[in-house]
Length: 128
Image (cartoon, rainbow, N blue to C red; front, side, top):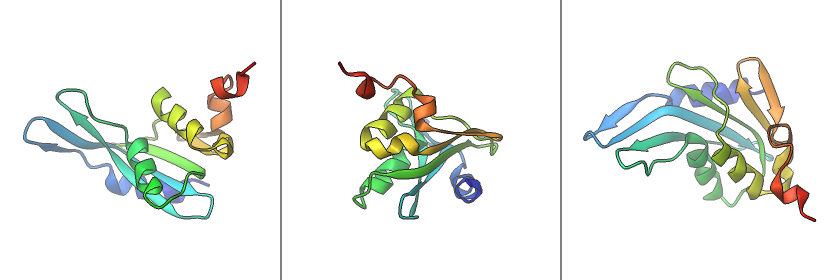
């Protein structure tokens, strides 16, 4: 299901270093919205730790187009291996839309789960 997204992400997972303070592309992400549009992004790492994840960049690309529901998302590192989203990325996915609990997330080459499975005790769902 995610093969097309993996291929898109691999196109952008190309590390680059800028002026000794900024490194990009060690991780790239691609996502597909519920209407089939694909958005991508790369990681940014800075000397002062103000960078952000590839998933955040792909989500920002999507948000520019007024969308918030994600059908599927994947991230790959520079060697082409799938990497699961960090907690910060999982939380962002969760807060964008309640529908994103059904987002299919690649966590490694052989495993795809829903966001709900990654976050079984989501704080938004456990309010009293």
